[in-house]
Amino acid sequence: MKKTCLAMVLFLFLGLSGQVLAGDASPNGIYRPALSTWPKTYLKNFPLNRITADEVIQYVGTPDKTFSLGGSDFMTINIEPKNGNGVIEYTFEMKNGVVVNVTYLNSGNFFGVTQRESAKELQGAQ
Image (cartoon, rainbow, N blue to C red):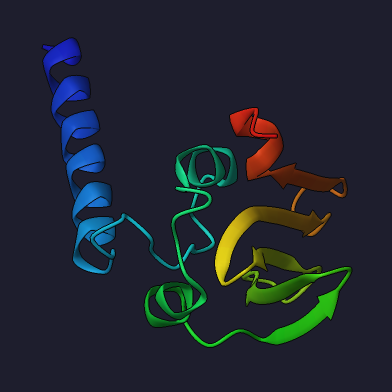
């Protein structure tokens, strides 16, 4: 009985999380990450070298900051932590109008440890 209840709760949780993502996702699967988004999964599944800046803006939202450096354009969105401490950022790096990398930065607001991840590194892209 306990296994059945656990399986039902897990199925419901996974089903609901999929529904949230599916409703606001582009045909390429791009969506705005939230506080509850698993960064490694988001970055591992992000279709690098296929997504345009316009698609990022349409489905992720207007960036909180933009800048250019070394031939790349960068758009950063901030995710507001619940307690207002620290910074959570997703930065989209674009070259020639397409996203070539996405990075995640959590400056220690939950665990006191800075966490950094890169889609390019997680996907093993060159």
